[in-house]
Figure 1 (cartoon, each protein chain N blue to C red):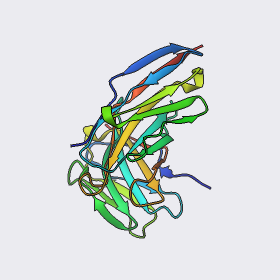
Figure 2: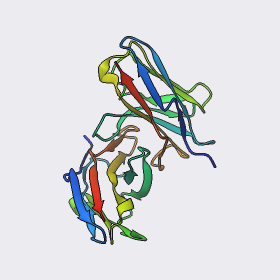
Figure 3: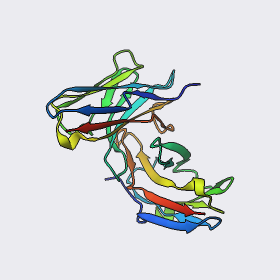
Length: 117
Length: 114
């Protein structure tokens, strides 16, 4: 079975603080894909990053960075120098290869981030 | 280009009424997904189309839910005899490739069943 766990339900930080959102996943697939999405109050899911299981390179995009570690089945997301506009719900998601997981993408329950001015 | 669009954005239905939700994917996108998102939860997969073929409908909660994509472009999610537990946001996403591709989401249709 595939599963995504985002243990942090809510996080509150003050602007300019760094914050890390945790994501732990479970899958039996050897090939799989991991995603992070942002859902601001407007409700539309915004794609942030996609990572293939065979590419463990960490990635940095501006103030965002991602740490993918297959050994611990984690795909954590760090926002550096947070801003009020970062306030949103963030979802981690997993999609396995079609041989076992079908075409489902499994989403975590989300982490609500509050960034206070 | 235009993103994924969904209509209506809001729908209020009386219990027992049938509803139809429309999704216009990004032009040329092969894959189309429907999700249901209850308040305070992550999206839950309902069904997947590759062009006009419905390849996975394992997430549809009951036989009251039906989806189609007859020409491999626009898709409709139909819910018959709506129940209060069907109240949720229904999200549509499209992807340019069949497997593993990034899914681009529409704004969703918020359904409230009274």
